[in-house]
Length: 210
Image (cartoon, rainbow, N blue to C red; front, side):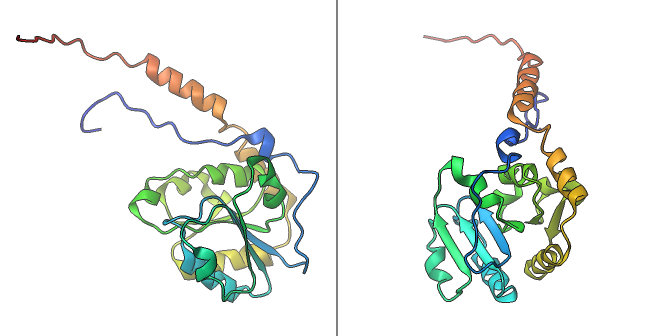
């Protein structure tokens, strides 16, 4: 904003048609536990300590973590017996796991990178109608009451507990699902095209002295 009046925010989106469709085959926990789930990169911004605390607080639940682990989180959490790491899975298999989640997590460290992030997986979680608990970052505010926000570890744990204790509500599922129907990639592309069409850079004279 300091350098140009030509600026536009084009946020992320989700592939609604894929995530809103219940898969034929859904993951099942062999012990029948409720599932607190996450899928995505398990990288330097992933809050391992939050996962540890969730595992201890909800010892009767399964924490299912789907994604490539590049920070050795599996080893660091090896003492927690109710955590399963699947490793990286194919995109076509994401809903196989997502539709098993009773709570979807955004368990990130609140660092500068994450403060500037508009997480794609929130659109995807909501597209499946799933309840979401996320850390407190600016881009989550646009979702309002559709996403529960935890200010710190303790508050995140409380929010997860609230979701787990509530009965399944079809109206809430429908509201979450509907919220993800419009922010898909096609309207985002149209927004970008409109922004580019309004951009008329100033003419300059370039002199090269040789």
